[in-house]
Image 1: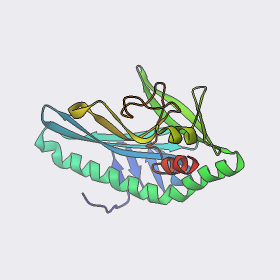
Image 2: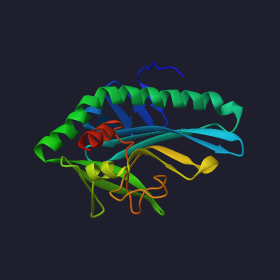
Image 3: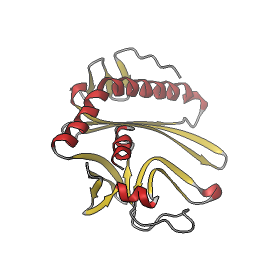
Image 4: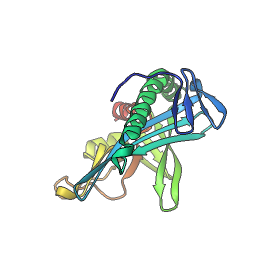
Length: 217
């Protein structure tokens, strides 16, 4: 997979230029990007392994744009899929580098001026996704869904996790971007955390949110 990019780059209904992208004939400037997410998910079923690329952009007005692609079922489409994967990754790398300082500065200014940051992500629900806002205070308190957990207490109890795992043995699944906060002591010799953990999708603006929470803990 190459790491070069030539503008304009077309991916589905998006046209990416050096300073903006166009979607449905409307232009969006990169300076108005609020948050970015990119991750690769590998799924294995009956000895068959599929790879999925997910790329999301959130603007300052909370408008959302998403691109995704999975492996081709037939080899005749493999070349197109590989090209789309490469273009998605290259565009993300370009946008991430171009907007990183601004996104980081926004979080740090919030901590300095408001004493907390507002971190937004989507939480999967039965009927789609729910938009959530987490408030992370500079004293270590994290507020979400009318609950307050403290990352310092969670770290002391050994239940602050950056990247989580579920299940045992061959059934274990890992989410490297999930942040789990729990002030209760773990059980079963530390293999299982206490009930009612606060779980945050840290894939948006990764690794900025990880590093902020680590510094506050």
